[in-house]
Amino acid sequence: MNRKYFLSLLPASLVINPLKSIATETPNIQSLKRVKIPSYLLSGDTIGITCPAGYITQAEIDPSIIQMKSWGFNVSVGKTVGARDFTFGGTDQERLADLQQMLDDPNIKAIMCARGGYGAIRILDQLDFSKYKSSPKWLIGFSDITILHSHINTNYRVATIHSKMCNSFPSDWALAEPIQIETINSIQHALKGDRMKYTTPCNVSNRMGSVSGELIGGNLRCIENLAGSKSEIETEGKILFVEDTGEYLYSIDRMFYNLKRSGKLDKLKGLIIGGFKVKPDDAGSEFGKTLTEIVLDKVKEFEYPVCFDFPVGHQRANFALKCGVKHNFEVWESGTKLEEV
Image (tube, rainbow, N blue to C red):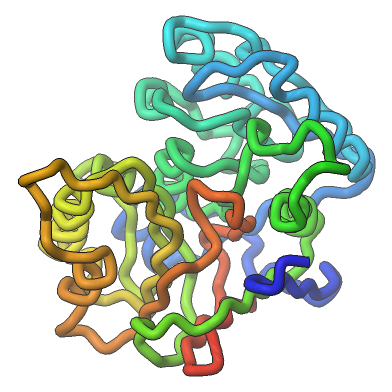
């Protein structure tokens, strides 16, 4: 077991679903509504695999199919797996139809996005969530899938799972690193209803505190791109986690300024900084500030807890997080704890 990160699980029987009805679509009303938790999966339930963004081959998803079947689930492979339209997993219409079919099919209990990349935003406004609202199911993925997490949370108040996708499952489990196995297995635990609890070592730049709130977040670039739209992330009273990859420090600074100027940092309960793979500055154009300095500068007027180096993002340490679900978030000198309530 990787000693940097620890995953604790409580039985699904101890997890209480406090909501019995689905919220309406109006965002300002939505913020007052509690989140609907989709039914957790049982042995024999079906997970659908689709490509709402980038393309992937059948061979590339085979390891994930084998693993999910070993968990006791059936798998339904969408028509976009193996399809390709330049960088996309099929044309916009093909990707739209595939995801729509899985949203509507009552036999599919969870939807695993095969990979990220780019493309979900191109089909988002054409999706019909009417059947999904009356019979919600788990949607799984990260990176570009942040688009779907945010849209669903803001408009329909349904919990989703931010986690690795099919392209992250190791082809040979005997050769996989412990952290790979732990993070993939965290998807299974989340789907089966185990209460998630993560603890991480203290970072000297962390800001201490203890809060409770709904967990929401994802890829910082995607969150920025949704600003001003009906899919815009709602952060008031919530614990926000962010991650990103392949961005220059000046670009990260600009994105955090977007969060600050749009009021997304004002009324947070807490802020979680996940993995950031920073692109090296060009020679002669050094930005002069670190990621830590960028973040702490944007939140200096607020008092909520902040942690760095949380195991989420474009990295091997990318554990499953239940977006929309209430969590306790504690940051102390002994370390950070994020625990589902």
